[in-house]
Length: 363
Image (cartoon, rainbow, N blue to C red; front, side, top):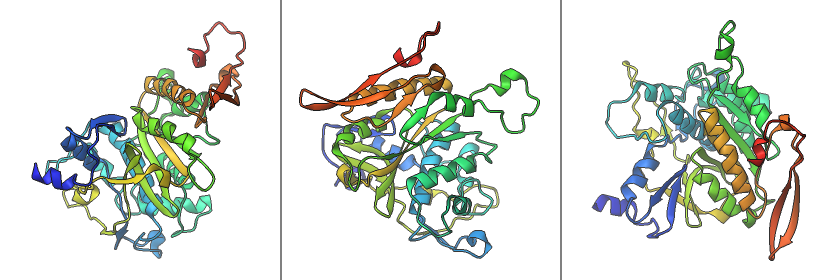
C-alpha cells in the first residue's frame, strides 16, 4: 500500500533477513508484518506532568529518564510474553484484553504502579543513584530485579547475571523459591518454576564495541527467548529489538509526551504506548559497548533450550560473549584464545566429577 511505502521508504530493500526478538521477517515481502510487530512492542518514553516523584521531586523525566524507560520497555516485553504471548499483536482501537490493561497499569506514571518511573527512580537511590540521575544498563537491571519481587500478579523472577556468567544452579534456586504468600503450600507446588527474566549486563569493548562481538550479538536477537538489548550511545539510551544487515532496530524513548490518566472504567488510552513511526535504525558499530541483554524463559524447558542455544552461540563467536556453567556439576571452564586459521577461537575445557548423571553441559 501507499502508506506502507511511505512508512518504509527509508527501510533497506534487501534480501537479508530482518530479525526482531526471535522472529525472522523478509524485508521485501513482509513489511506489513514487520510494522505490526514493531508497533506491538510497548513504547515507553519521557513523560511530563506526572505526580512529583517522592512527593516533592521532578514531574518529568525529560533529559534523565531514557535508560529507566528502556528498562520499562525490556520488562514490558517480558510481561507481554508472560501474559499475552510473543505472537500477540496490538491493533489500534481494538478492545483491550484485561491482561493487557494490567500490564499497562504496571507502568503508569504513578507512585503505586509496580514499575513506574517513580518506583524505579526511588529504588535506584539504594543503588547509589539520586532521583534525576542518569542510569547505566546494570543499575536499571538491579532495580528491576528488586521491584519484580513486589509484583504478585506476574510472579516473575528477575535474575541479573554478573561477570558475563550464567550459573544454572543459581537460577534454578531463584526460579523455584517459595511463591508469594505460600507459607504452607504442598511441597510439589513450591517447587514450581516461576517465569524467568534473565538480564545480563555485558561490556563489548572499552570505548567502542569490539567488532569481534558483533556476529554473536546479532545471534542473541535470533534466539526465541530474546527480550532485546538495552544500551545505546553515551548518555542516550535505546531499546534494541532486532537487526537487519549491519543495522540495529530500536525503540527510542527520547520523545516527551503528557502523562496518561486511565479512564474511570479502568481502560487506558494506549496509542502513545505504541510507536507507529518507521522503525529506528543505527549502525551496529555506533553502539556503546556497555549493554544489558534480556531473555525470557516462561518454563524450565525454555531455559534449558536457551542454555543449549547460547552455548552454541558462544562457540560460534570469535570472542566469548557469555559463559554458562552448572555449579552442581563442579564444571570449571578454562577459556583460552588460540590462533587457528588466522582466526581467534575460544576453546572450552570441561572438568566434571564422575557421576552417574550425564553432565548437561556436554550433551
